[in-house]
Image 1: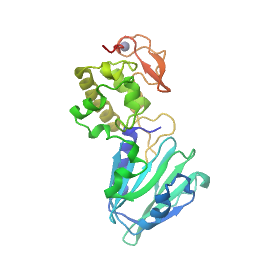
Image 2 (image 1 turned 135 degrees about the vertical axis):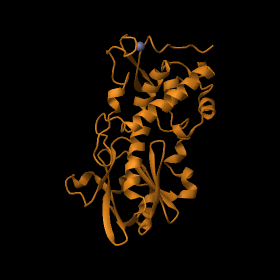
Image 3 (image 1 turned 120 degrees about the vertical axis):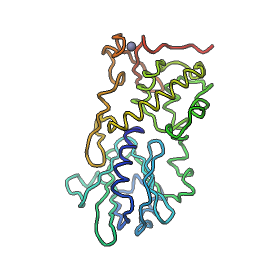
Image 4 (image 1 turned 90 degrees about the vertical axis):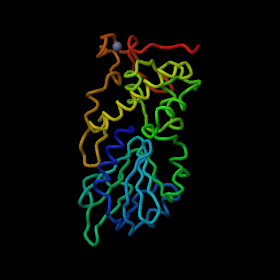
Length: 282
Ligand SMILES: [Zn+2]
C-alpha cells in the first residue's frame, strides 16, 4: 500500500501533467470505488480547469476552477496512469474511471484510475467542505504539515503502543507500516513502547526522524515493494534504504544484532532489539 512518500511522488508527477489543463471528458466504467457524491459530481466537472494537485496524508486532491475538488484515495491497489492516448493494453475490467484532458481544443492525455481489488475511493466535494469528505473526515492532519510542537502534543499521553499510534490516521495522516517501522528505528524507539511513556526529548527525536525519513523517501521516488510505480510507470528506490522493514532475521546495519519482528495493531513490526529499547511507562 502506498504511503505518504509514494503518494507525494504521484502528486508531483500528476501536478506536472495536469496543472492548467481542462477536463474535457470523464468515462466511468466501474462505479464501485465512487462515493455517492462522485457518481453525480464527476461528470459535472467537465470543462473545468485543474488549478493544483494537493495531498493530505495518503489522499490526492485535484482542485478545479469551478470550486470543486476530486479526492482520490488509492488504498491497497489503486493506481493512476497517465497516457497520451486512451490505454488499450490493460484489461478493461480493472479500469474504473478515465479522465480526458485538453488545452484549448488540443487533446493532452488520459488519466486512468485502475484498482484490481477495489478498496480505493474517489470523492467529489466543494473545496470549502473538503474536511467533510467521507475520505478526509477520518484523517487527522498530514504528518508533514505538523510543527514539532503539534506533533509532540498529538502523541503525548496516548495509552497505546507508539507503533499503533503512528499508524492511526486520525492521530496524523500519512504513515503506514513501512515508514512507521523505519522512523522508529531511526529514532531508536521500540515499536512496543507505550506512547505515554515517551518523554518530550524522545517525541522530538521521533519528529526529526519522521521528517528526515519521509523527505529522503520522497527524493528517492518512494519505495517500490510490490506494484507501486509512479503515474509514469517509474519505480522508486527507497526500498534499498530500508533498515528494518522486511529485514527480520538480517543483521542490523548499525549494531549487527538480528532484526526481530512481532505483531502490533495487527501488523508485523520489525525492529532491532539492541538499537530500539522498549521503555516502560512510569
Ligand atoms: Zn541495531
